[in-house]
Image (cartoon, rainbow over all chains, first blue to last red; front, top):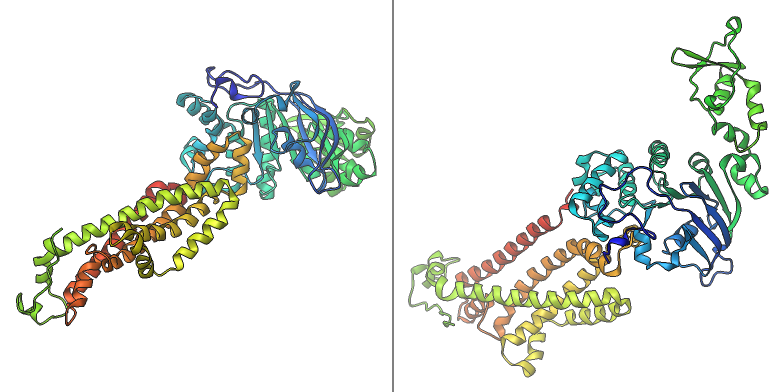
Length: 346
Length: 233
């Protein structure tokens, strides 16, 4: 079970290469091809003829109401649930072509309840897959320390037990454990669903940063459309019966919901949600004219949504966009609507 | 083995002759010929019973863990076994195995089995579903799941079962004296047969049995602390 090539889907880095986890490591391209899954005794399929493609390095969010089959779809990829027909390929290779344990060792897997091994220290938990694929002690040790830093824990935490950690810390360990052998694909099943809102927001932000750093393909399941919009490069919306309702970028889905179901699911405030996807740094500002300089100052990292909110709050129709002492320009309330007209895909 | 010394009221100290509540002198005088050997025999009876019972229970539990249909039959059988009073079980076995250590051990092993089997099965099942899912999702094989996750997580329940099994076996083993001149039950048995039961012998043998049980229990508690550092926090 510990052949050196067992480390990943297809041919993950050979076990003898150095520290591992170099940024810019490979990401995998995933394709669902007419995948169907029925649970015995159920009339409606859990997944119905699901076809879509996730480009390498994409953060793809599966979202939808319960019964939409999003968790099922996720677990089809690492074959925790077998599918009936169709195929799922990773970099062109069917997930059915590999022995199942070998497939799974090459795919990071993170779940809501984390599932840390309570009898193992944080370090031992993180070293699970490295030990399965036969890494030596020194390499595993170096990788563990690297991962602890990557997910925002301290190196001293390696010797603690899961029971000694907070919920947020546990999920960080879960993430580090999933990243241990630097897999090209990460599956995340509502990883932040059990966390308090503040911790969740922090981990969402850090996961986005981490995704930019390590550039892996991520498939992320959530029932929370807000989370889907903030996290995803692409969103796949699944409806009852495992039917793909829409698959596109968050901005395109908000701008052009495919049908009534999607429109309802993303909410009536979708224009505001689109504004939340952009910051003042993304838009063309008006030049500042000294005599009518707006009183309210905001940094360019402010989202347009928050900028509009501030204008409403301060009963003004213009903001001065300032980074430090550097005046970037003026943002007018009227400009907000124009941004939305500019259309999706910007 | 050297035969037990039955106290003669005509001999010994005035304490012994008067059968006072407790005569330390008698304990000193008869440690080497009565109490010491009885204690060693008692430890042997217990160790063999718990040792064999543990191995059997462990194997049966692994089988039942893998083939869940077998758990209920095993469980019902061992529960029925436990309802038989130990003295009756000894007598039931005598026609087959005679007045031998084998008879005693069969009975004692049966009782440890009854205690240990459900504890080990429960221990193997104690890994929560999310832990099992994460383990499978990371690519552990069935065997690795058992050796790396389920067994280590079963240790607290197994030691819990061992504590009950050891303490109850030490207690039940005193009844072996009805069949054999062995164990801490025998001095008690002998003392009770005196015209007036000899208190010092009953108390000292009884105290040794209690002390042995407490010592073993504490040793297992210490073992748990060493083997289960994760559940202590």
